[in-house]
Every structure is written in C-alpha cells, then in structure tokens.
Image 1 (cartoon, rainbow, N blue to C red):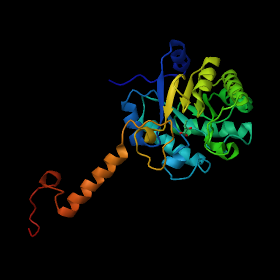
Image 2: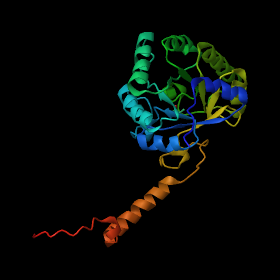
Image 3: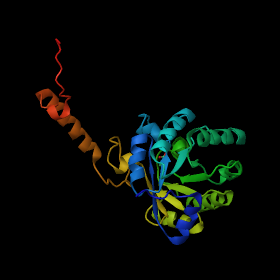
Image 4: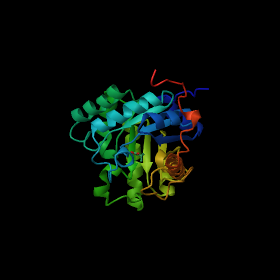
Length: 275
Ligand code: KIV
C-alpha cells in the first residue's frame, strides 16, 4: 500500500502529537525509490552528496547545478515522500535577491517540496524573505558542515552554557522567521532536549540524542555503505558495503570459472549462423 506523503502542515502536527519521524538523505533515483518503499517520511537531498556521491572532502565545492541534477532524480524516485533540497555553500549568502533566485531555481527546476539552508539567528531576516517568496524553509543549526572551516572542524557544538543558550536563541529566531522545522546537528543530548522544548516546530536531530522530534541520518551511513568514516552517532542498521563487495566478488569468480552465465541467463534461441 502506498504511504501518504507528509504535508508541510504535518510537521507541527507530528510535534503536537509527540509522533516521531525519520529523515534520511538520498541523491539518486534508485536510492530514493528504495526509501519511498519504506516508512521514512522525509528525504533530504543533502549537500553531503559532495562527500557521498562525488568523493570530495567536504561540502563547500558543491554547486547549484550539482544540487539541481541530483534533486531531480530523487523527486522522480520518491513521489510519496516529502523532499527537501539543500542549498549549497555560497548560493544564498551574497544578497536576498541571490538567495531567492537560487531557492526558486531549486524548487522550480526539481519539483522538491522545500529547501534547507544553514545558519542561525543571523539568517532569520533572509529566511523570512525566502518564505515570503513562497518557498518553505527548513533551518539547520549546531554543526553546520558548510562552515566547518570557521568552526574549526567537524566538532560537537553547544558545549558551553553560552553556546547552548545561543542555540536556543537561534532555534527561536528560525521559528519566528517561519521555518517549518530545524535540523540540529552534533550537540550534547541535554542541549538538544532544551532546544526541542523551546520551540513548537520539530527539531530534527543528527547526533543530537534521543529527545528531539525526528532522527536524521545519512542513508549510506546507516546502511553501512560509505567506507571512509563513521561518526559516533551513526548506528549501522545494515552492512551493505560488505554484502555488495561479496556479491561483486561472486560475480567475478563465476565469470573467471565460466560458471556464469548458465542457460538460465542466456538467450537460447537456435540460430543457423550459416543459413
Ligand atoms: O547534507 C546533509 O546530509 C545534511 C544532513 C547532515 C542533515 O545537511
């Protein structure tokens, strides 16, 4: 049975009802269609595609064209799942016009349901303008991968009373600006709980402990596909990389030994080559 696609109004409703949900990444048609077959409510076409799909060390080099290309294929693969497209580094911080222009492009050229961008209270005015232009916005605070250079690396955020209070202020400012939800990345669980209790829109946590409204993970991480590195907060729900390498090696061995393809995997129509 096809699942019912979440609407933007459901985000607040889920929080009011205390109903938890999941939010995972996808960057291509096949993975999106697999996720669409699951009970997952939300897909993020994250700029983490820089690492996961393109092999970069970070997200900074990802372009609008990369995001549009990948988001289009995810939208095709997951018609029953709410899809959020990520705004890449440098695509929304030059001016309000630039931000509205690029957010509109991502929505219009891909058919995604909303956009996500990184930044706290300082971005509230900009976010208000984007929302006024008719574009639903998901916020992202805590560890913001596009600015890891300024943050001094991939580090847990909100670890001091001042920075924890700042995260609460950021979340309140994003809620007041009109965001329908906020990703909160890599913060102590106790801080994430306080942020979650401070706002009435869902806090979608990644590395933010159990007391948030929604859990976010990179799909290739949770399925055990991405071999390069495993953050502490990632639980491996499968070890697909091992399974995939095993399958490829079986194919290789059977090919070397002439065991593949058998008649079952061949077209066996008799053809008289000399006739
Ligand atoms: O790009 C991404 O995958 C993200 C998640 C970590 C939330 O922003």
